[in-house]
Amino acid sequence: MLISLHKQATTTPKIRVAIQASTEPGWMVAERFGISEQTVWKWRNRDSVHDRSHTAHRLQT
Image (cartoon, rainbow, N blue to C red; front, side, top):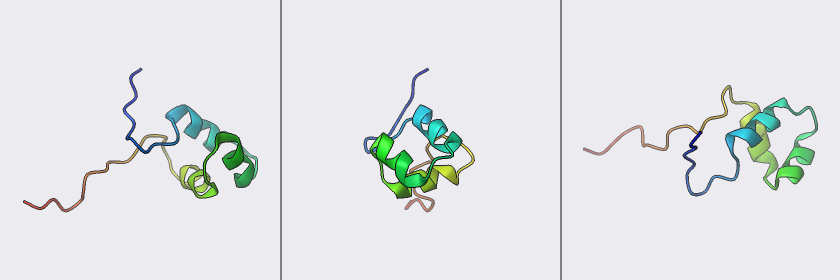
C-alpha cells in the first residue's frame, strides 16, 4: 500500500494505530516513538488514523 505523507509527518498510520490502542500513559508512548505528548493526545482523540486535508478551507479565487 502506497502511503502519501506530508513532509513534516512524524508518524505513520501504523504508529497511529499503536498510539490509539495503547493503554500506557501519554508520556511513555511519546518517549517510545520519539514524538511529543501533544501528538499522542491528538491521535488518541481522533477517530481515524489518516491525515486530514491541508487545503485551506477558504480558497482565494
